[in-house]
Length: 144
Image (cartoon, rainbow, N blue to C red; front, side, top):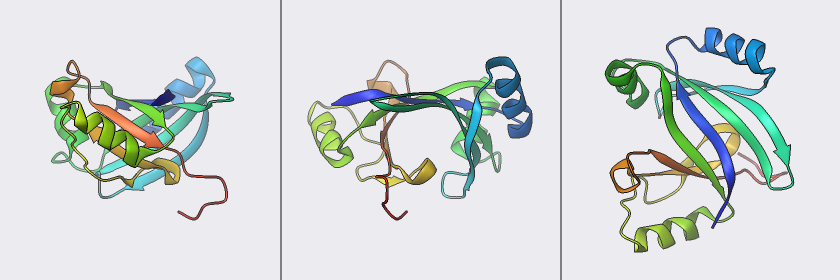
């Protein structure tokens, strides 16, 4: 069901400073910078590698406001790992299969994610405290 680790989501207070840090320390390249009003973040996807299974990224997340999920995370825990995103080929099927195991779905239906992907989150309490995101990458040539 899982095809790869798609990305690691990292909460940060200053997106521009975090981008500069990851570029200078690791030599990562910015693949996209977006504002996602629905999720309340300004985010950057930095490419780690490409493989036949797909690309991997570090996703840097700066909250737009303190009352957003990432804003509350920063207030409670400070900067750091926010979630792990796993690639799937069929998000709807993956949600059905995972939901059938008893894992609570934060998102019962796919929603819009970074770079045109379809995403859904799984409840961290059912997965060892790890907020988990499933990602179905936008198909090449598909409209977002």
